Length: 106
Image 1 (tube, rainbow, N blue to C red):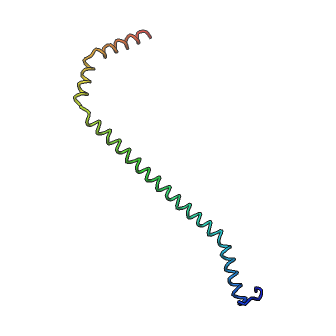
Image 2 (spheres, one colour; image 1 turned 60 degrees about the vertical axis):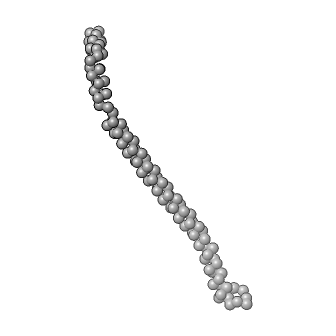
Image 3 (tube, rainbow, N blue to C red; image 1 turned 30 degrees about the horizontal axis):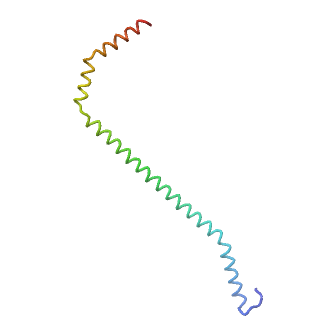
């Protein structure tokens, strides 16, 4: 028991013990607050990563759609005309003659 005081000794012992318990629990409570804050921050980190991946997927899909639109909007007659011009030119015969000459030198 505590030293004689105007208050009952059992009351002072109970108050002292509860104060000691609070002081003993303080480090554990502080660490639990730190761990909870860390878990919350990590959760937000993962949420931001998922949101960024979703935005990247949307951008990739939009780029693919734009590419398809460009392919489909190309004038097919212009491509056919260019192919016909290459086919009518003497470039292919010149390349064949060059290939034959190269093979003959080997």
